[in-house]
Image (cartoon, rainbow, N blue to C red; front, side, top):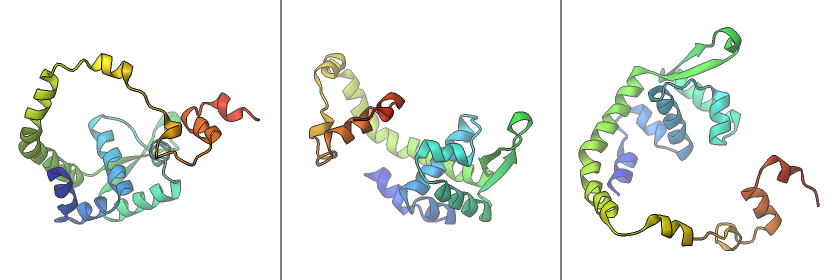
Length: 165
């Protein structure tokens, strides 16, 4: 609960207000910051595919970030010369680092005893995993969706998509 409250109340910077205003903006920021820490080259097209958000939506966020100087683009080289790689600025990384430090100082000590107790418990997770079942056709999330549609969603490989009745 504290983490949620902290996220929703982090409005002391224009970037924080922007990022915390919608889930998509928050996840876009997460993608960019994570790409920096994992030393991963990322483009708007890749974010579009991975997040499942429209290219127009991603382009709008990229434009917003560029206008506020929260992001810079870097031209690819060689066979990637047509690509524009996205990178968060130092200011964004500093703000994000403050969050990580706060989380480690404030949240980890609260959840650590629970996590340790869970790990020390005698629950056999392997056996639990084998006995647990998930029937998506009869869950509330997919209630009212035809079995064929549910099957398509859950088994969306190319062969299944091409199969015709």
